[in-house]
Amino acid sequence: MPPAAPPAPPDRCPRCDGAFACQIATGACWCAALTLTPARQAQLAAAYDGCLCPGCLREIEHTTSPGAQPLV
Image (cartoon, rainbow, N blue to C red; front, side):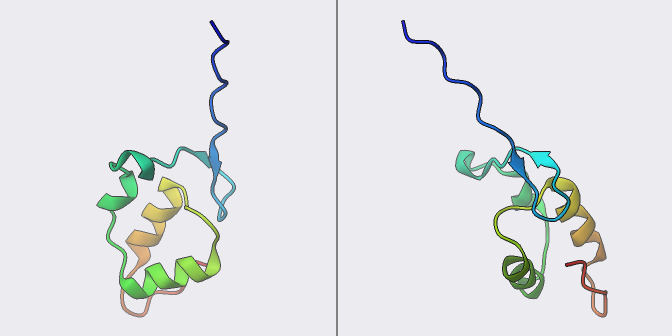
């Protein structure tokens, strides 16, 4: 029997460098429950490569409002 594969390394948040596990491949990612405006989503996509961690996205979600200062 072949040895078990080592666990995949955690993803790293490009905003805070924190470790997290992206679950988009499972179809039940935590980020689907967040509400970000299309403009904020576009801003984040332009500023960062890859996914942001749950903490950063929650912080951004709570500060997304008309006139809010950009967090990126």
